Length: 399
Image (tube, rainbow, N blue to C red; front, side):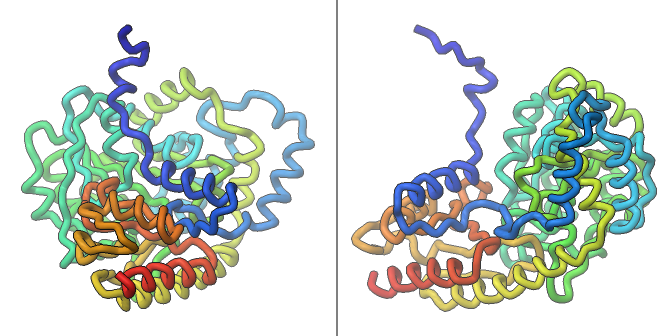
């Protein structure tokens, strides 16, 4: 009997990050002492003022009904305010589409801009969703391998080598998931000018914009590279900055022509997004950033601890990430070695082995287009970070 599943979805890879997180949570629920480094999810609660706004919204009957497809006007205006405050970019509310989280904004962007056969440049290591969402839109994902020696920061030279006549779009994300790399403002300007020169559209994923540490500086390409004109689309959301992953509020910003098409697409797929979550997002975006600063202080402390502990383990090397809340250590020195009686030849095998033997969960580099590495999130408690890495150090020391 032939499969009843469409060829399109049969060819779609599952989310590796969500799969690792689900497996870790299932084992923990079964009583296993699992420490999960897999999910990109802050361990902080959503700030109380945001929760209070949602509670109040529940009692308002107007939030019990359908609202405009593009989002509540109050939220679209709040996104205009937030965009100006954080990037200096002037936009209109009509250029904003509120989506069901940042991932939905990414998928909608590709559906809006990509035709079958169009090539989309995706710097690697990349977030696992980018190539699959391009595939769903009929496009061809083209990984652009970045250099570990350059901190995984994509350069114009690397992009130019990958460009062809079919190149339609560039995916640009800084700070990066999974590496935490922050591209310098000077290089961002160069990339923007290169894209403009070759009439290439750019999707700017700015979800980690506030999570930058040390001397690193984050800027929006839409602001610092005016040569791009209206070739950019910005995707963003409240999940990472405000610890609101479960509220599912993201957005997409672009030229009016692009946004009209995106809004029309959403009208035929999801209608509008949850009104209660939208009201909560208004409170988040119009409030101050004090809660964000508190989280950032904790993330910075955890970042430094994780890098120090990883680099102290024989066979592992880890560059200091400048943004987001991930480390992306090189594990090639552990491949082919016996650890706890098991030998792993790939980081995918090693990740499975670590979960089985010492009960720590991390996402292997194969999921991000760069075997030999693993992504470790430090968006979890200090105690758990230390304990899990101590387990890893003991395993390696014993061999």
